[in-house]
Length: 283
Image (cartoon, rainbow, N blue to C red; front, side):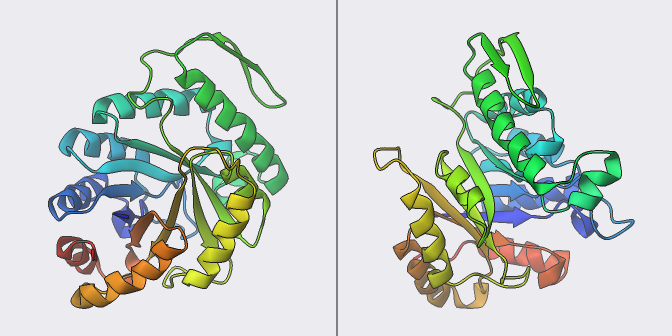
């Protein structure tokens, strides 16, 4: 069981220097990972937004142990070859600590249609599936050719390869009870679910998670490699032992990563800094 912090890149957290500071504090405080949201714009007009890839690269250079990633990259609005380069470089820079999370993105209007991109969920899903194949194909380091509906690569060869082999872990986001994202996740290395009935300030229950895990694994090849299950949640640092017992209930149904979800919806930046400094609720 591993523990990470999840940081917004918007609002008060739209300052890359702050994200690096909080991420470095997380490593010093015993957390196993630092994951940053992916937004290029936000539903709150006028909010600052930090580029998450820039912030994660700075964290790679200023930390030594924590796993790092942008979760979840809204891949359909990105050029997959650019993402492949970014992630391979991040993995080399961090010594093999990168994680690649991907999904459709949550804001079709603000982050797709406002910039002339197709916001339709079906189109985004098709682009996501193609883009994942392109990213992983380019990570191979071998000459790679791909012809899809949306993307074309002709004899592309990307070097250096990522440090991690056979690839950087790929986690897929989904919003339950939609099923298709979880069938997609079953083909990759991990699932990062949210739930339609669970808001920013809430945590899904172990029962809700069990339903998601059961379905996802039913779509997965039984002989496949170990599979990560990741959720965001909230714990109270003042009662760490009780929280550790609570998290054990999630571990019993398959959870491998607990991401402490931090942001304005829980208090001030200082409050979140104190939560990070208190460390993860380990047993």
